[in-house]
Length: 300
Image 1 (cartoon, rainbow, N blue to C red):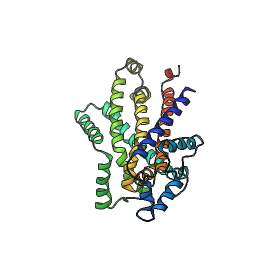
Image 2 (cartoon, one colour):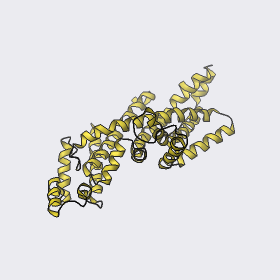
Image 3 (cartoon, rainbow, N blue to C red):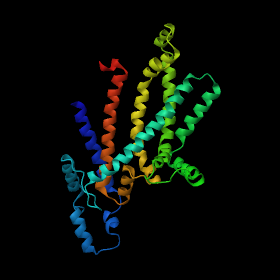
Image 4 (tube, helix red, strand yellow):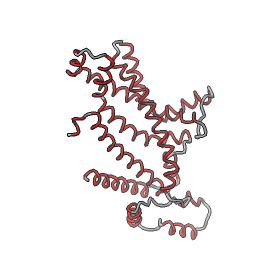
């Protein structure tokens, strides 16, 4: 019950902040809807129809009443329900986010284990360099480099769209490199810390195989901070898709949010922010559940 109440207050706070920031920002939605066409009378009539002529406080209270009933509002440009547009675009973002997480896990987790287990200083230097470069390079810089190399120069992968299965490769890699580097560093640190625990020495003294020691005892007990990082980074992926989806013309929630900001389309932008916040809350809940599965002592 406490978690539910906290969730309601969090969503209310985020919706309020996003509403104020969007409505107090410079720009007029009518400029994007009508452009330079239409008389002043028509503009005022449309402003009244959309409710934009009312004070901000009245607009805010109307917005809250809609949220309570589960209504995210209406697109100012297309006049379609915001919820319908979000449902249309959200699956593409979820697919991109899950592929990014899978790429990061398949790359970062094994490299982190190898880095922690390896005795070679050259291997350690390589993995440290990879994690440093991966964390330092922003996704909006990696994306154009990948486009130039694999799309323009080599002509291996498409630049944009969602027509082919290979269209997801470049946005996945551009989003996943930084996450893989962070996961490598966290896995290595947690793995090395767990290796020095007394119960690992006892497990080896019992004659257990090295494979069992590494994966059943060390990795399992090292997973708690890794799960925390993954849950936080998945939320970061959802916020990072705004730039990545725009670069690769990926028809997801990030592209919808970007276009709504350009058009000062308040209801759509507010709906996108609220959905991402809700996903964050759900991820935090799932992370707590995963903690208790990994570490039975937390069930107490």
